[in-house]
Image 1 (cartoon, rainbow over the protein chains, first blue to last red):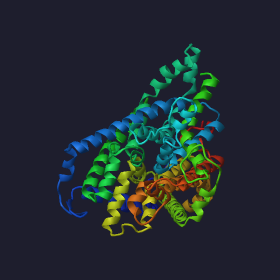
Image 2 (image 1 turned 135 degrees about the horizontal axis):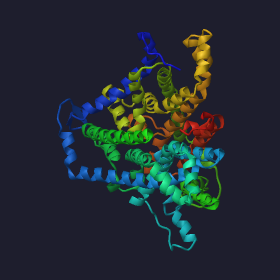
Image 3 (image 1 turned 90 degrees about the vertical axis):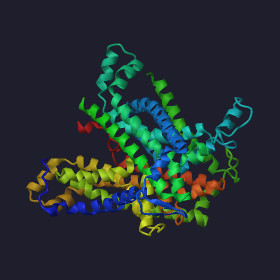
Image 4 (image 1 turned 30 degrees about the vertical axis):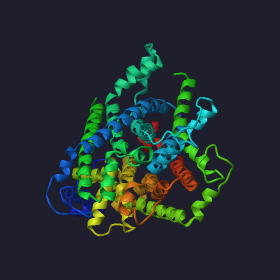
Amino acid sequence: MMKAVPRRLRDYAPLGFPAAMLLCFFVVPFGIMIAISFYHRVQGGFYEPAFETANYERFLTAFFGGVLGFSLLLSGLVAAIAVTLAFPFTWLLVRQRRAVQVVWLVFLLSVLSLSEVIIGFAWSTLLSKTAGITNLLVALGVMDQAVSLSPSFGAVLVGMVYQAFPYTVLVLYPALSRLDPTLVEAARTLGASPLRAFFNVIVPGLRNTIVATLIMVFVFALGSYLLPQLLGRPQQWTLSVLITDQAIYQSNMPFASAMAVFLVLVSLGLVGLSLLAGRRENAQ
Amino acid sequence: MSRIATRLAFGCFGLFLAAPLAVVAGVSINEKKSLSFPPEGFSLAWFGEIFSNGEWFAALLSSLGVAVSASVLSVLVALPIAWFLWRWHAPFARIVQVLGLAPFILPPVITALGFLAFWSELGLYGQPWTVVISHGIFFVTLPLVTLTLGFDAIDATLVEAAATMGADDRAVLRTIVFPLIRPYMISGLAFAFVLSLNEYIVAYMVVGFTVETLPIKIFNALRYGYTPTMAAVTVLFVFIAALVFGLIARFGDLPRLLGAWSPRDE
């Protein structure tokens, strides 16, 4: 079907409501946030219009550098583990019967939609002393006494991988389900084992998809806000936690906004990179 | 890979995903108020507590109210965008589409802080209805994606046939387009509903001190220690999500919605 170009102003009318809503409630709040990031903070939780870069200069402190470094490291680790687990899983999944796929997809979506509060609570229960997994190990005779495994860095990592895993599968799912099945068949006919076909044909063929997915999951993990609080100690708090802490508890909106603007720039840069990686693959 | 190895792999992944939920389900039927697993005794009292305890029930009602109104709002915003992009060739209308996709791609704390700044500047901070608009905008992405897929799936010859027979835009919309995209609209609505029900940070930043949604209530309760009611709420939420997505799968084409090509397309 050839689409026509709108000629009259009236043709644009249906776009009026959504455009106004997004402008008013997304673009304007965003703009206000950027403006506040340059404002001057007044003691007592208020701020006044100004143009100063003091909020951004605080980025140069060692404390902020530590939190930023930790956030990036944690997100990178989560992305690497989630993709390493999810890629073979998705590859197995797309080769199942349709009915099996649907059941798994419903399960994955259900986990993905769960609140961070609920995931954090569920994992803290599983890692707790009284109801946790160590009780099972004691019953099996592997351990002498049940212990609490949270809060700890490992607990934060496991919780975030759990949260990111269904997301990663759903990001990989379209690319893997559209992969030409004859590629694997050809490799198998030529004598490659299934594992070799996987590592020598599938993985290199989807290199750019994997890179794009890594970045997407990285940005997703950067947004994790409650899990570091529920499963970790204060030294495991991330940039997202720090932003909320400054905004709500320290009442320092200018500094919180400056950090948020910084996070936007990092995220947008990464999303742009992942789009580039994805586009290159489609062009091939 | 042999069939047994595949089964084993699926079993491991299933165990990883189900383990924390299974423990919470076990804890929720404990007879005593303690956090212990395997459960001691059997009781559904904590599920009853969600409905009989005034605070938990109020949180359930406000969560449902926000999720229903916000998901309807997000569909109302997404539908005209998806229709317009399908009907007309207007490259700069893509800007509106990108705006609709943006809140979901950025870390949620950014959108949350933007709303906090916005509602405070207007002097409306803490008004209960502001969370409906905030969630409605935050989740526009979901119906926008499903509706765009729905419009792409419409057979162009149907529309051409209708136009040849003299149907105008309005008639085409009512008799052909709307019935065909309805399943996609319902899926988008359902996605937004479930996610709004579970959303924490935007709700917390916008109305955290005036309205208690269920996730906020669980988090606040966690600070003062454990109560079995939160385990019961968790089981309820898993059940709602599985029910909603199960219904989408039953009445729609879930693999297609999630980006797979079904054999019919080829």
